[in-house]
Image 1 (cartoon, rainbow, N blue to C red):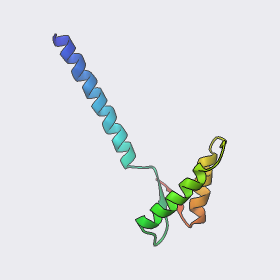
Image 2 (image 1 turned 90 degrees about the vertical axis):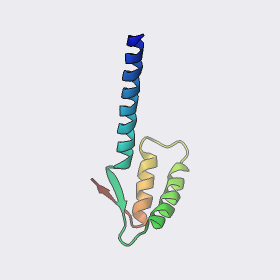
Image 3 (image 1 turned 45 degrees about the vertical axis):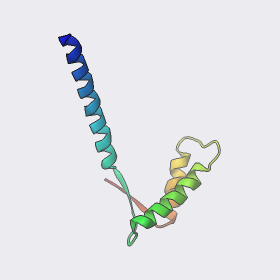
Length: 83
């Protein structure tokens, strides 16, 4: 009985640690799109437009969706800042 409780505690702890790592990595992205004078609403609108454009590609090759999205955002004046 004690061994079962220990295994459940270890499994729960490992799951919580993994969850914290995933949430933390989502909260601190490595790359950030910047555009001088732009608001979050500007970003959201351009992001939606470029995402739709990139995801409309039929039978994309490896990396083509991301490259299309990046070109679209750059065409709208955004610059990807590596952190």
